[in-house]
Length: 344
Ligand code: MRU
Image (cartoon, rainbow, N blue to C red; front, top):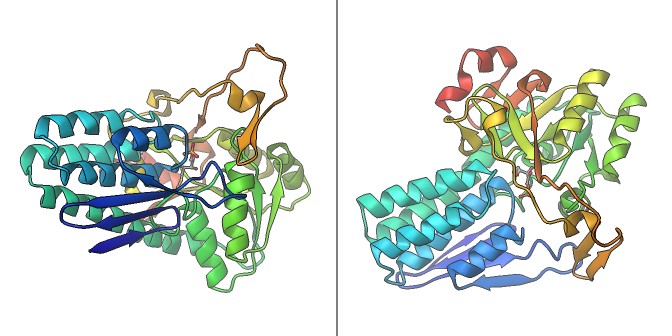
């Protein structure tokens, strides 16, 4: 038996059985509860409700789900249907689609459970390496004394490896650079306040949690020297989608002349997407904005029935990005304008 292990996902892989466990991220940081995923409906629910989340990790988890179904003697037609259901679980993170496209191709061309499992394991292992490469490229940009703003959660909880933007921060810290991280709490689902704060505390990386609206104020006080975020989909012109609020961070950095970086693996680049306008933006439930829920239950504070607009992501235009930190290399605007992202 082989076991794959990351901060939020584990899989025991046997010839006839794959057991997938997910750390339920909706309950963090108060409760560390692992869920065993036994059906595709459970995996789809976990993806939609953000029990498993982060663009790279949902692609990895969905691929392992296809492998689990493959070793259960699922017919080829049924496996293709279930893969399509996974593909549609969340619309913005292209990693999910890219991973499921790869799994679907394998099911069509080489319908042998062992081959399907091999590809899912490869996707997991590859994500670990991609994170290491992003971290190495990005850490080269971080200097002693940097005070870094980050948004959402882009760490070990969001990938199979050390993370994207948070992987860069983690490596810079390991290299002995004296850095301080300001964490946007990231309304409405608080991935910063709940998850990034949890990860950075575990890693002993100096950090301070702020409300999203405090970031511009800190910039005006010259307390932020760099901002680094992850992405759910990058268009070939360099525009990119990330957690709602990222665009505000970019605009504020531009005004204050602070370098603003995006870090992501090639599996986040959508080579079929020319421009940020083409990126589908997930709309989520009103109650996420009307209140908050977690291990403590649900609290609603807004008047019942009030209209809510709750896009999960926004698009940051390429002109606000100082550099795109990918696994292959770090690209500047000139590289991107010359088509660097077309061949990622
Ligand atoms: O809705 P989420 O929590 O899945 O959104 C995650 C993000 O926006 C991350 O910044 C992005 O996926 C990059 S994670 C390495």
